[in-house]
Length: 194
Image (cartoon, rainbow, N blue to C red; front, side):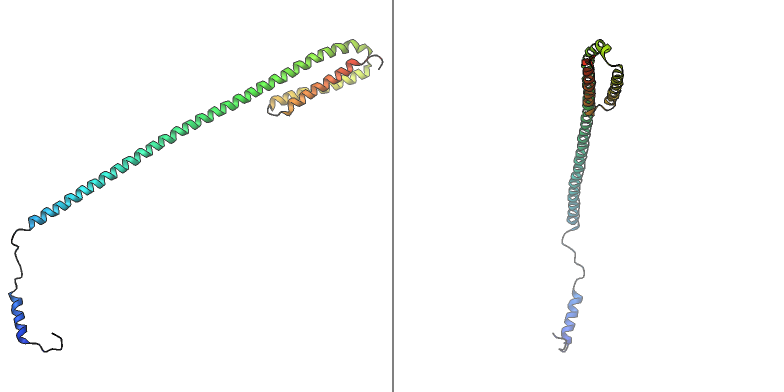
């Protein structure tokens, strides 16, 4: 039927009668509510199990992350303690090396001084025997120079104590002692002919 076609009243009446005769409510042949209810409960219990499974995985994940966190914290703490111990041992070694170096340096300076004193004693005895033959003015001038050399040696020893790491000070002290011995040797060789 198109919109433009004339309406057949007879057909319309038949259709109206059929519409009125239709049953508006139809009762099911059996009670469906119990099946629907059991399915709803089944879905709820299944989703509860899924939620329980999901919740248990979440708890396992939290527990695992806590174990990993505590383990890494302990691991880091252990390494930090080992690093502190290692650092302390290195400091002790450096201090003992410095002490050993100071002891060695002091030993070398003492040995140098003993060698110098031994050589000086022999030269002084020679000079005292020749002293009557040496010009007094020259002798007093040499003594003044020797006092300057002695003063320089004392200052170098103090510098070595204050700055034991400076390797130049022991070399300078040795050179000073050698200079004094050189002057004393020349003085010991002087005789009355000069």
